[in-house]
Image (cartoon, rainbow, N blue to C red; front, side):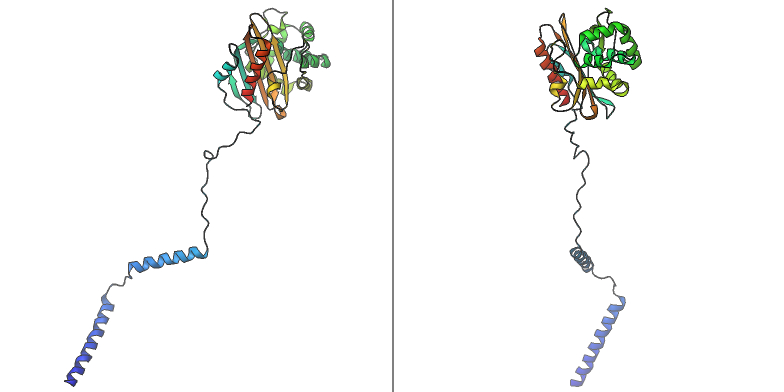
Length: 296
């Protein structure tokens, strides 16, 4: 029994070895998938813990972070109906021209025609200085809105031809000489054309014109307060103005025009016409409210 048992045990061992050999030689050589995945995850985790990567910051687009409008920049959109409401039963036209952009950023009823009142003095000044007229008197006519000087220059330098000649030279399409040759204040103008006049003055005219507009006095030569509109609404920003007013039948005209901002960046023109029943104090406040809406 003992001898047989030994042979039997040896046979078992040999059979086991053979079975192992067969298994190794013919079995699949693929490692278990679970182990492979586990190793890969472990390697990535160790690498991340050794040199952590910062979490990327999401980029923002211009739409998500819109630019803020500079404090000194007027709003680019003004509701025409809002401006109409500000002048009550009157009429109003307004243009704000940004010289830096080279474009109008506000334009409301820009081609509507009005009686110019004293705004035609800008054309009179151009005519007088172009022919070597007295600079000091021209400046006084502008800064104090002196009617006597304007009448004298009108007669001496061509009358209605001043308007027709300079309208052609500057390219004013809505400006007309007065029907009565002696009434320079009845010249017809538009807000769009007044902007063109300022563009010409700033680019080509003698600096004495803009110097006079920067020195505009609070009271005109007739005692009228001419700081309505742009001066009252500028709120500390530099300005230069030529104002206009006339009365009384059938309507009152009240105009404010000039430049606002550093380097005369904005040309601002507001022309308005009011019923004769609207007094000048009320009309002045309304024009100032319009300019405040334009300048923001």
